Image (cartoon, rainbow, N blue to C red):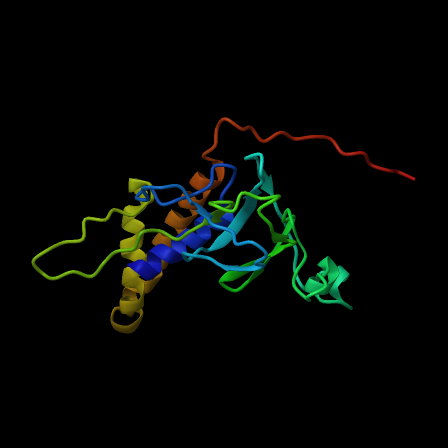
Length: 214
């Protein structure tokens, strides 16, 4: 069931529109804050995520300033390292200031330039907006039940049962596989259409494009 749920979550995230998906069982927003350390470039994420959407730092005036993502594969860094590009002080330490850029490396990230208390609010001075997976089902004893409901429209809860049953049927009930696959595909299609179109306040507008006939 958890495998089926996470597979659906991946499909939904890829089809999401302006109104982005988050498990309705979550009790907080997919936003995290953390402390910055004077002169430190590298930090670790405190929780697992599927995708980082945006990162911001809080300046000394209390304003959140968005950071621009960079990567070591960018053309600017083909001949020099990112650290050298942004400069080092006389002691070989990273230059300090108001961070403008971030680079994600696995479960950690680096800020350039490194933060300093004269330009940044260090306490809870970094904010990350992210995409996370759902709250999964927990195996329990036969005398209790997991009351977690999928964070999906109730009209498609049964889809999880079909998807979870398919691997078993492929081995032991092969005659059911075509019917189950057909049902799964139809329900997945309607679920994706729902998430792709559910923000009715924003209309899709068709605009013209100049065509050069020369």
